[in-house]
Image (tube, rainbow, N blue to C red; front, side):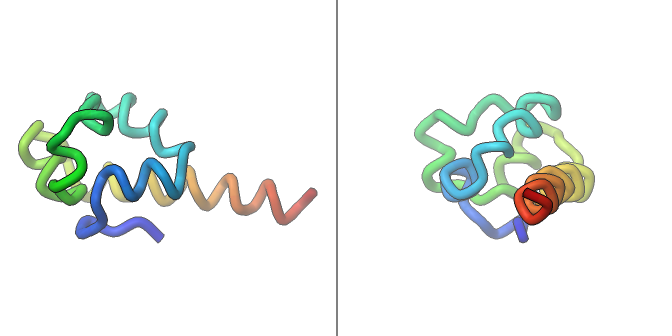
Length: 72
């Protein structure tokens, strides 16, 4: 599960499918230097992004992938 306290780079490394969700929310900073130090909540707030909705969408994305893997 992804939380607001996780580092952005940690999320992208652990869950590559999160990149699409970040981009959809207008958060393109997952590759910048700040992403290594900021947690998800800090980065989202800095860009005016709804943290709760971003977390919801990120966790849905990883849950969907998990369900697909389990079906195979």
